[in-house]
Amino acid sequence: MQQNVHSQTVADRREIIFRESLGSVLFGGILYGIGCSFFFLAIANLLFVRPLPLIALLASLAWIAIIVGPLISGCRRTGTRQHLGNVLGNFIRNRFAEFTSADPGQPTLCFGYKYGSRRHYFLKLRANGIKSVDWGPGQGNNPGKDNDWNVALWFDVGSILFDGEGSSLGIYIVGPSGHKAGREAFGSRFIEFLKANQVPLNLPPSGLIGQVAEVVEPLHPLGRIRVGTDEHVARAIERRIEKGSKVVIEEIRGTSIYVRQTSGPNPSIESTRP
Image 1 (tube, rainbow, N blue to C red):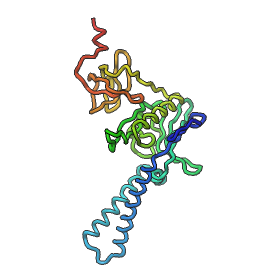
Image 2: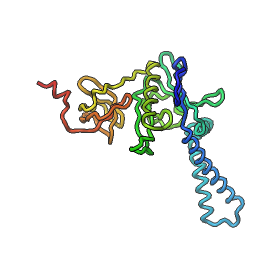
Image 3: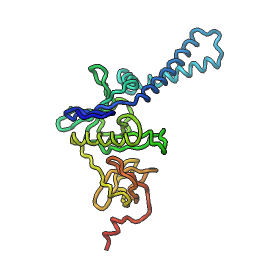
């Protein structure tokens, strides 16, 4: 078994185990605790307080709706058992990504967590639908500290076999958030894990940085660009970029190239003109 502080790859390289941060688990527990406290307080107000002022009545009903509404919505969208398992997952640190072979010749990548001898799954998708793995800052990131970065898996929504969270967005955050250096290292190990299981991912050469390319598949935000005769997976840094636009390559993270729209000439194209 290969391992480090944050992740482990089992001996047959069909599974990688990682842990959510203790801080996020504790923070989630505190939020749920506060929410439940106000929920039961609202019920107590409705049952035992007489007379109950109109403002208190409306506040109690609103708080009950805030708690019960998402619960009912989640149960309807993914099923009661699945949704309650998703909620329980907020308090469990040990997660996994594993490859299974449900369909002959079609490996399936699964994400979830273990509790006892059982496994709860968040997502299952065909490996041939994976487009890219990269990393970037989250909403709470401090640019001076780079303390809130995430590793993201991009995939074709048509490759989803099971969506236990009901999102179907084509992106899945793998592992906890953390400092940039740690997330880069984890992202690199995750890419190695995927490649070891025959997922066709290519790492773009660093020599592409600074070159100008043409968008051949709209960057919304993930698409493809062409540099010379080669095509690569790319992401727009600022906004959506349409097909046919020119972009300049500014950074490479994982298997994705980060680009910004430009109106300048493409050196790789200009050099081939007579």
